[in-house]
Length: 76
Image (cartoon, rainbow, N blue to C red; front, side, top):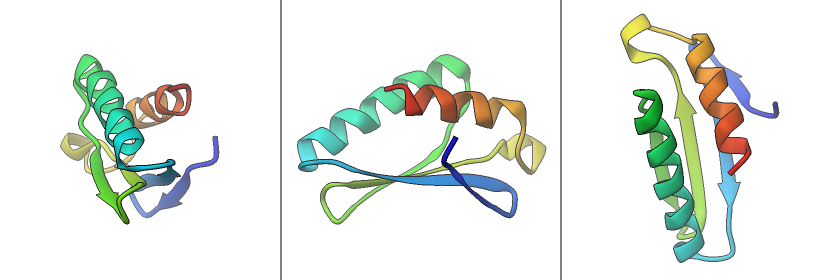
């Protein structure tokens, strides 16, 4: 897993060809997250980049759920 650990979260940036691909990716991440009842922080910036930050807000830090979702995101 090539996510960056920052304090109580893991983060990763993804780059796409254009805004449309970035938005499609965000929608897929949203579907995965909702199915797991886990909600990441997602930022689309520079029109084709997506930054994702995972932490379990209710636990105040990282849990197995964050790593499980990160793996699923990597497999999109």
